[in-house]
Figure 1 (cartoon, rainbow, N blue to C red):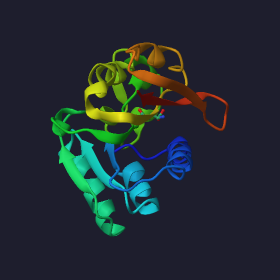
Figure 2 (tube, rainbow, N blue to C red):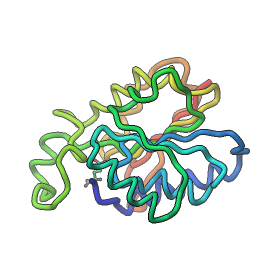
Figure 3 (cartoon, helix red, strand yellow):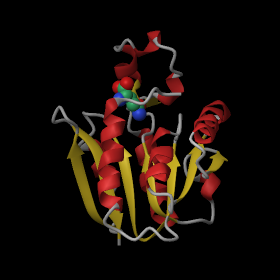
Length: 191
Ligand code: GLN
């Protein structure tokens, strides 16, 4: 799995601040492309009332998430499958994802290949933003009214990724920065 980065801690902190302001009774949260499970498990630990589901297309990754969930004695669900496909027919109040978002080039020019992380956890496609494009198409049908989405994105995707989410169902779109002032998070709210 991807080894969680400091940016992902910021993502969790930002989500925690938002969820503290709303009633979470019966609220569901899906962590898609969960990898190690770090995001969804940290949120379940912080908000025990949340109904949390972790999903990943890789059964090996899901096994790591399950191990981590067990270690922290957290009652969450696990689903194997690609992006929203395992959630067919369901709707969530909150969806969070830190999907693979590097382009082929960015990956090739980095030293990431030398590490033990699978490249499937890092490369989003030729351009990098392909997975967000898929989400942009599918997400509206999988969110409850006023549902929210929290994404981590690449520092160079602050314009390309929001441009993919042009459906009128999005009433709020925000880019937030990481500690080095780079665009790093993209939050959306549905009507
Ligand atoms: N930020 C990570 C890196 O550059 C990539 C994370 C991801 O693809 N989700 O190593």
